[in-house]
Image (cartoon, rainbow, N blue to C red; front, side):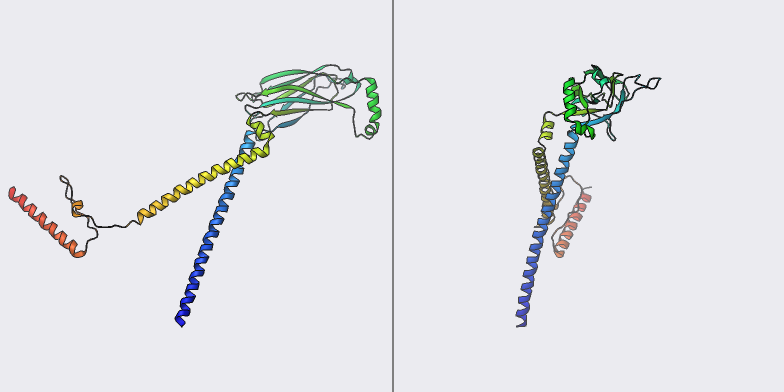
Length: 321
């Protein structure tokens, strides 16, 4: 009776251990698969993000332009054109413009509606782009003028917005946009790193000036910029499928090699070599045959026979000599 109880308990323990090993194997496999999928997904996202920020440049850059001029000897007024030397390189950058990318370069000017500016008329604005050596690689000049506003229109505008003007919430100013380039493409062998901006008038009143550099995307860059969600989903999915295929192929190849190696190592020897296979070929030197799978008595008898045959062969050779 006690033996039956022990046998029954052993069976229960064996069944529990088998179920535990089965569940452990399944949980380990699931965790391994989830981990591999997460790693591949993060690699896909990282690869797409690196490609996006490397391939697609920044759409717009705004650089504040600080103009300078020489004051006259009497200390009143300008005795030179307002000029600014602007470095376009940021910290850690080697190039300002991406290779093969088209840009538009625009200068924004804020001017007060002062009597001097209203009587200014036309004036010129000049832009020079220079390279690392400080040499000018391109130069362009553009015409600018304030928008015309009649006396009646200015009176009506002042009367309408007088509360905002009194409290300083608005100012009587005009904004001008001077477009230097609409389709500028930088030379990759002689890139521009800075600009010299000059307002060619000594009777102009200025509030502020800004330089706008905007990229015009075409082709694949246009799709990446204007459809970022679709591009991100497509790019990450493509990277995920490619990495998963590479991982699966590598796992299959290495796993197959391990299985083949284990099968080769575990292959048993079916039978010993035959004597005809152990004897050396004609014309070759004497080779001691390797005996495999023979019993001790049979091995001793075979060695004795070989020695007797060798002795007879040596005696026959001596008699012939």
